[in-house]
Every structure is written in structure tokens, then in C-alpha cells.
Image (cartoon, rainbow, N blue to C red; front, side, top):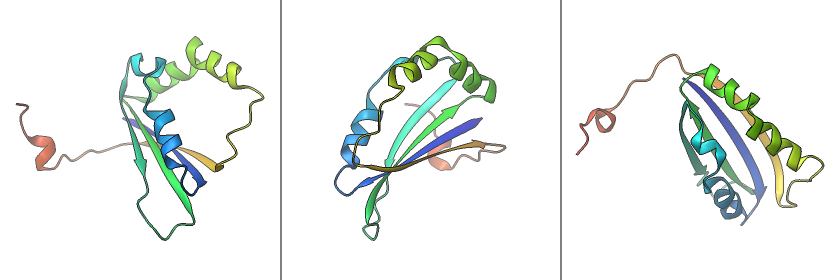
Amino acid sequence: MLIQTRTIVVQKGNADKVVERFSKEGVLDEREGLIDISVMVNKSRKLEHDEVVVLIRWESEDAWKAWEKSPEHIQGHRNSRGQQPPEYVVSTTVNMYEVPKVRPGKAGARPSA
């Protein structure tokens, strides 16, 4: 499994705009090998900014690479070329993680109803 995280730091009060953008279905949702997308908001009140983390799980690195090379992904980047991020975005960081082991807890081991 491969996980990509995108951490987006925004000015206070703007997390909902990022959540809305990343919650919409799109061409990525139809990709072979995509497991799921989670959109998370850091609930710490001590931060001076809001922080949204988008976690995208892929079955394999090959599945992710196929998405990166797909015409839909490439066209999406072409369409956004030259556009500035919204003024409320402070920073964006992208990381990739190989997942060598997953240990399900009790909730993950329950049979489906």
C-alpha cells in the first residue's frame, strides 16, 4: 500500500473551504487501485492557522504511478498552470509513505452487516 498526504495550512476560519474542495467526487475517484480518500481537520485550538490533511490510500505504488501518468491527471495540472493558490492558503506539503504493515483493530476485524 502507498499513502500520499497533502497537508494544507490555511488562515484561521478557512478549513471548511479546503474540506469542501477535497470532498467533491472527481476523476480520481474512478481510478483503478484507489482505496480511499480521507479529509481531516486538525482540532488543536493552539494553532494559529487551520490545518487540513488529505490522506489518499493506493493499493500500490504502481497504481499511484498510473494515476500520475494518466491523461486526466496531466490535463488537470495543465488547466491549473499559472494559477495562484487561494489567498487564504499559507502552505502545502505533500508526502508519500510506503505501508509495510497494517494491523487491524477490533473495529476493522468485524464482519460486515
